[in-house]
Image 1 (cartoon, one colour):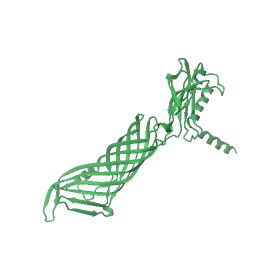
Image 2 (cartoon, one colour):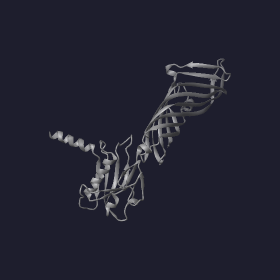
Image 3 (tube, one colour):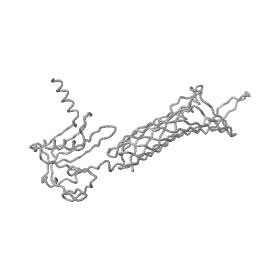
Image 4 (tube, helix red, strand yellow):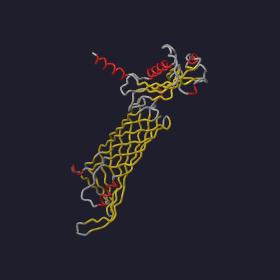
Length: 361
């Protein structure tokens, strides 16, 4: 039985928010029914007040009961225990999809005079007004004494546009039988520049569907290459490649919303049409190689908030597909389609490392 009680105690404590309070001045504990005023900024504070400590309401990692009203009530309980009748919120961390699901706050414990001046708001027809008429709070906000929080359902942006650009690296192996110069050339050719643009419609500011366009470009020239001809002679010249790999298709995104104050993490996945084009030349003779197939892109990133609606940050993606046949178009206008064997398929997979921007509206 004692082990069962211990287990129940552990589970109960794990489900509750993590609380850490420090007090620099000792005061008599307040009655449980005493009012505790909550201030959001220092500008709201009266001219005379004293700070007697701090409290932090956090997340144990297993906390489940941690909505904003509960967290604020926990902070008020800590204030009463310390003899404080007011709180100044110094930090408010919102829940997000890729971390804590809790509201987390840090607050100063304060003692003020004339507390009744801050606990009797005036009710107007379409607003709530503070006693000194310094602030009007619209009805689409939630009011906890003198601290206001936006109603996320009414404030979230419905549309998101993102753009990324950066270096990209194809993961396909080089052909066999190459000399050192050719190996270096193919290695360099597998490094290029990628960029993409996406547009999404978001539901509740977090999940959405849209369209993604992505492109990869790489080019190079290999000089002084010798090619043996059928008549036994050898010619010397240059090879060149100008490769473009394009993707367009529907995309899904899961992102933190605008309540994530520092930035927003996101996951993206897209499946669509991928095309390959190589404007090549051999010993001065141009030709074009093309191909297409189903492609996919999966990526994740973190963007730091510059303004409430504009963010910038790193993004990493894995993009590509495979080509099982290629079409050659020669300088004289003739074409040829070549079906590739399994060991010769064209591997288009690559890793994109980018700096991206997100704009919500």
